[in-house]
Image: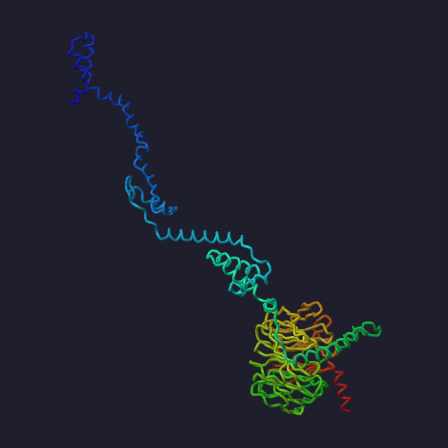
Length: 572
């Protein structure tokens, strides 16, 4: 069958009989050569390869034609009136024609994630529109007016830590929200009617209530005390300034020579006497104004009086029910006060008789100090307050807050006009006793401040604390002038020489006390001898004698050679 199909022309020509002889010859030859034809076709067949090369005719278009219906992704679910998101479109693309075929009426389902995305978009759009509307709302620029409008709208006039601009923005958002709810006009109209009906006096009262800072009215006794302190301090201040001017203008006065002499005396201080003061560690000491008596207190709750310079026990003061934290002599009278952890302070005379008890603190007491006039007593306590008491009546005149943590130390200016307090909040504050205001907040210590002392020159204040440093503050410049890296452990007490303030003494838990020059605050002398923490110290009025007490239960007296010679002459 194949042969017949391949040679149809030859059969026709033979049957026709019109072929010449020579052609018959060729045909016969061809018929004889025909067996070789299978070899020639491979040579001629290469042209048949084009159909194989025409495989490129199977182009992507012909194969991709079935995918062309993919544009049928046009059901973006407009049937529900919702706009499809990119995520749903991508899901539809992934599903392909298997999910939707042309002519099918299937609907797409919206995933929960798509719903959440739409909700977030709608919420963001609403917030954006609200902010746009809020930017067009007119609100007062005066903070007092903003507070007043917030109050009229029944909202808090201020939030914790809120600033003026934040408060103004909050009012704007509240007004936009009320406007959306259709209540703003009604509320504002009602408040306008109330304002029109209110009197001017009520408005003034409201303005006064909004004024800051506020104050608490004190007692008549406090007012009298402030007046008395003002009169006392004016006289003392005038005398101090007059003396300073005279010494400055007098050509015979040589300040440097005086300071050098005082520092030389301080540098010659040596241990003169050591005495066991109690069975328990000692916590405080104080010289009497004339230097003839020394008072000490201990953790046993007992205070003792000692005669100087032999350190002989004169009397014992018993009455407190807990450990004693400090003791102080009055600068004027033969009186002394003790502070205790039983939350009370007591007043004694030099004979050992108990005179008054000062009650009012809510926590244990720390340090105490007498006012230079001798009429008032200051007490510092762990209840975060310090208080001022009237010595004659025993009445609490002032309860002063201001520290964020326990108040530990208190000191009075030599003029009597100022008081300084320090505490565990690493802060020292200076208060004006005549007005009751905090005039300075001395920031610089990085740990609790435990000791304070005013210099007799009137403008230096020393502070020491747990950061092992002593800082010298200049009240005129309202900043720290010197920072002394004084000890290797915390500083428990600081004291200026009381007469002129020529040197400063610091006590520390490193078992030493050190003397520093008040001119350049360089070290002058180190008083070593205690075997435990030094808790307190005091300097005698003439500056020739220093006493220290310690947890080793001993009282140590340090004096200069000139003071010993004078004492020997007095003995003779």
